Image 1 (cartoon, helix red, strand yellow):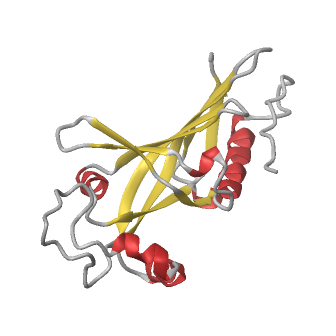
Image 2 (spheres, helix red, strand yellow; image 1 turned 90 degrees about the vertical axis):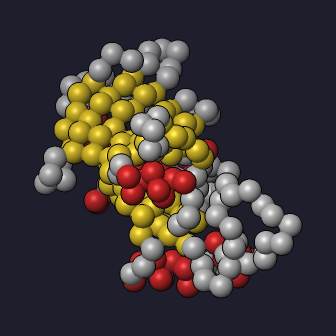
Length: 196
């Protein structure tokens, strides 16, 4: 069973927006191991070449509070990778209907195709799961009758993003709570309670 996000205390100083965000990051880390947790499949929004938002569900693979990094896996040929290469601004939307908790986390992202983390992650993926990154055609491409089933090289990549702003909303019939936070270049979080 996952931990319930504690409601912010009303007593000044007893719980700050930054402490609440740290609790949300712990929940994100827990969600990675639980396929049924709604925080495991957030919506990731990027900015398309035409300037319009592009949104899709992804599977959260890592959540590291110390550097505010969120990671998903992807096919490097996907449209979201091209969008991130063109404009690295992204936003993640997490919604837990049971806890009635929404977390919007925004920042900058990059696509990582090589290096120790990418190689270690690829090595740890089962053979069955690797097939998802070995398709000969890119995601979204129109399929032809003569397309081979598998590519010679994997198109696996990590999408790493570093969160620099957060908007947290807890819905409650006794009173909604909302906090808006931003991260300094030193990695410290500052935030305020705002009107829901």
